[in-house]
Length: 321
Image (cartoon, rainbow, N blue to C red; front, side, top):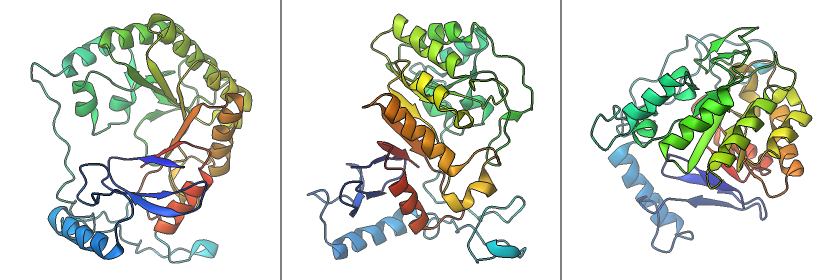
């Protein structure tokens, strides 16, 4: 079964074993029937309609509008009328009424200041800051952050990302794995996500650096669960294997978007099938390893394209939106 997790209220899930489609909702969702799955379509539609009116679904009821098609005509074989992202295109006017992010808490129960201070003292980078993530307050207030290894400068330039880019970034800090282990263990968390910039200038893409960090974390705190959200290592399966067998608990790599929109969203050196091949090899290198990928929504993809992507991503146990 393909398992999907998301911050949204409803997930359209495809069974990898049966090929059937179903809607799965969290316990608190107004969509969820008392008996879980299996509610009738009429009752589902009635609840869904009331939900849309109450909170908005991004296109109606909440002030949001769907992404408009570009007014600038395309030419060539891609002129199929499908929506695709474009720099400078009109943005949707308004957001759903429920689309809000709270400011970082400064209350006595918040650990935001402590996390920020420890990162600063150890000169560690986080994707929370470098990518200007709007959820930084929620994560740091809870006492954890996503540490970004291998520096703060990426060798690729994906259109959606705010991280600094350069063809030859400074070399990685050799003490970064030790600093990371010290910082994470001081936070008292039982689950940590490590990520990084792309480092195409390093022969193994930084896989060895990641593996060292994982091993140090496990030595200092054996019970901690470690997720590594990594690059495609330029398709280097040896690098994939190095990390997959390092002792991590979740191997994550994002395909980012549906196949049709890859060239509009990701750096040309990234690729849909290259990404899938790394996830597949991680599974082969360590059978039973949890693998995970994520998709951004709202870039012009269709429901059918999302479902098709979920089908081919069945190698992953978790798909996030």
